[in-house]
Amino acid sequence: MSGKVAIVTGATGGIGRGVALRLAVDGMTVVVNGRDESRAGPVLAEIADLGGTAQFVAGDVRSRSDMDAVVAAAVDRFGGVDVVVPSAGGDDDAARSTDVRGPFGDIDLAQVTAFVAQAVASKLNVVQAAVPAMRERGGGSVVFVTSEGGRTPTPGQTAIAAFSGGLIMASKVLSTELARDQIRVNCVCVTVVRDSPSWTAAFENEGAVGDRHRRQYEKIIERSPLGVASPTDIGDVVAFLASDRSHYLTGLVASPTGGLTIH
Image 1 (cartoon, rainbow, N blue to C red):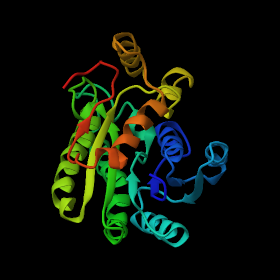
Image 2: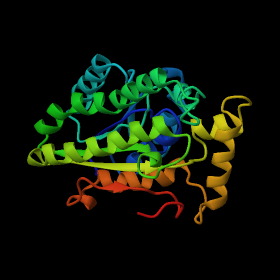
Image 3: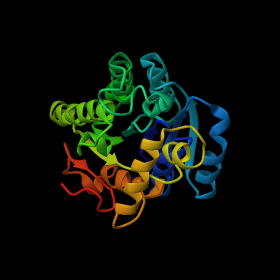
Image 4: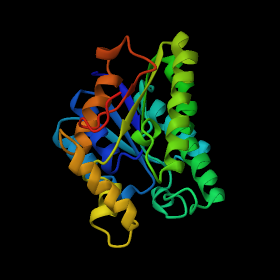
């Protein structure tokens, strides 16, 4: 993947960081995107220590104009865009709110629908912004990172199922539409991942999630035959789908859940 340029949203921490590191190890130049430049230093330093090239470009995935600016910066500084990994979800706190996550009879549907709309836009904005640049390069790869809740019905996850399930189907539509441009579109669906914002909220920040949410995570950990993934474990899967090693794969939905779910 030497010479290729990747944009990874949410790359200053969690899964996005793991993806950025893995792509850099494989030789890609990585545009590290996030909202807070102060959080970018550690991942940029890690990539540099690995001999890779990366640069932080600020931008909010919820803003199409911000994503246009991120793509423009990638083209201006590195000559183009070959890979886009929409990892950031927009508003993690909203996803964990008991008004959004919980038994169907208890959730606030107005907040749920607002969350779903914002979360879908947060994944699609950067892709729509990047498609013209990828066409200029003669093709490329999009790898969405989303929740396994979009594939596996899980009590209390109406909002996540609506968002992630919709995104999965949208990824299949995009894979069909963009194939003529040699742009591949695949989706990676994750469950509990250690050293991520969700992990920190559930197990390290008192009161950040409800008791039901935490117990659900504990059951997932207990029932995952291959153990709990790290961000770089997910990065390995994304890197494969981003690379030419998967040049004949598009429209795929992969679930690296350690044997917890089988499709």
